[in-house]
Length: 310
Image 1 (tube, one colour):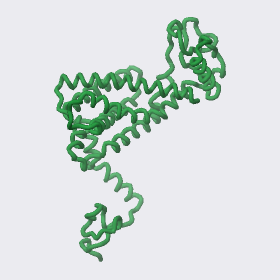
Image 2: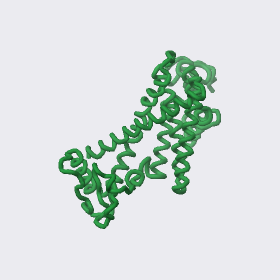
Image 3: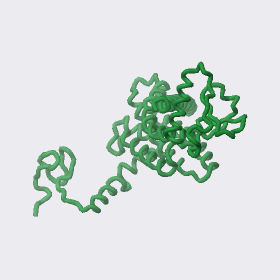
Image 4: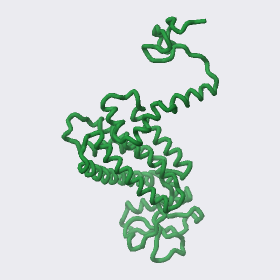
């Protein structure tokens, strides 16, 4: 029977090691083949036991705004999950659940199920909802999968508007090939949403940097860490949005989560940057409005690209 204190070569890096762990790479030195259930229990115990990095990180993220960012800046990184890993984990959980529970971040109703007066549609593409649609109403980007491919589709643009004409032809093509324009666009947007929000991280970091230009001790990457932690919290709130008991509850949740995210940003700025209350509120308003404008702009670019590249 071998003694655990007898020097052995680490099976991972080959370094002479004693006791239970290699001093060079940290791996266990005495490993045995595990059963399948042993492997599963080891995984669950390693990642989800009370004192694990997972729970420490989630607790700090949800209930202690700014703590994770401050710890990372101060090089206290061993006790928490790395920022990028945390963001990828939470966003993956959200998007997986959203496709399972609600069909995605967007559905066809959130994009197109809106009636507007024809007088408001002076430019762009307008499609009547079938031949019996009322004269004073039109549905923008609205197609029902039960309609015939070309039912109710007709040009509503001036002949001189070449760009809008191409836009209209693309929508007709989508309708003909996929049956429902709204469902096709929603599916494509949901596919691109993870990339879009990840791309918004440096945008958020840039907006925060503008608020703290006088802080010469902080670099862009420091603001990026704050942005990753805040957006991780935001995605954790999105998971609550999957509760869709009724339209009224859904609207209440939207308002509550928006207020929660705003309060969280104020508290996080105060904890991480040492900002006063009034200034933190002002920065939160500035960053929130600018972020929404950029997000809306990128959303529209993505929407146009989806249509024109089809």
